[in-house]
Image (tube, helix red, strand yellow):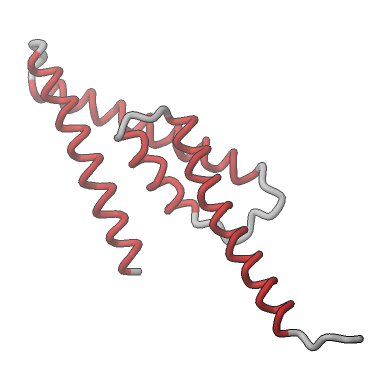
Length: 121
């Protein structure tokens, strides 16, 4: 839970910084601050929905979909988007990294079990 909260705070910080930057750029171009803030928040809501859809799509493509934390994957993808990655690549990368880590853990567990199993022969 502590890690999840730390990840959420990290995401919130990066998202907030990215959104503030976008509002500032719009204000620098002459847009009123309230209007800029509304536009940026509406745009981010659309991006968040795109992230949710793309993460769900990539998870659904996996043969074993159990045990994936969609909220964590969405957070990871959102952080990547705030760092400049496009939604498609960010969602794909978040799911791929989680899947790879999970596979490595499953392989490690299987190898440990095989090593500890009694040998016949």
